[in-house]
Amino acid sequence: MALTKVHHISLNVTDAVRDTTFYTEVLGFKAIPRPDLGFKGAWLTMGDQQLHLLEVPGFEAPRGQHFAFGVPDIQAARAELMKLGVEVSEPSTLAAVCWQCFFKDPSGNLLELNQPMDPQAGRVST
Image 1 (cartoon, rainbow, N blue to C red):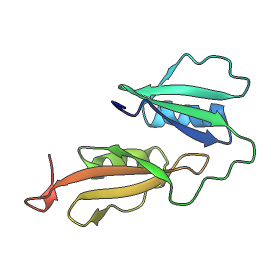
Image 2: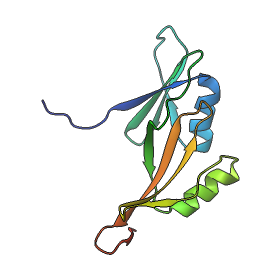
Image 3: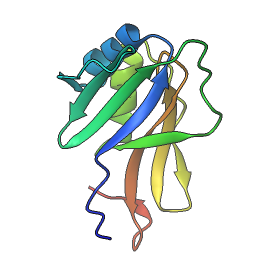
């Protein structure tokens, strides 16, 4: 088997239209064509990574499950999200590996901002 990359991430959401707006207008994803699958949802892309939103009535986001966005400047990314009304935790370090902070999409899915550190110097990579 030769796995080459993660093709897409699929997230359950409670309102596909609202969450699509969040991912496109707040996080900068682009909507791409999606076939009629018999239920509401959206396909989005950021670079070569796809995100598929699936509307599931009554969905409750699981605790702790998340994915992370790499950022070059965690403080600037956090400030930008907060300016748009998104609640974001204070950045913290993870054992000289990275800086990380967390926020949620409108359906409660946990998302992370992650800025790697230079492991040799114990400081943030640029």
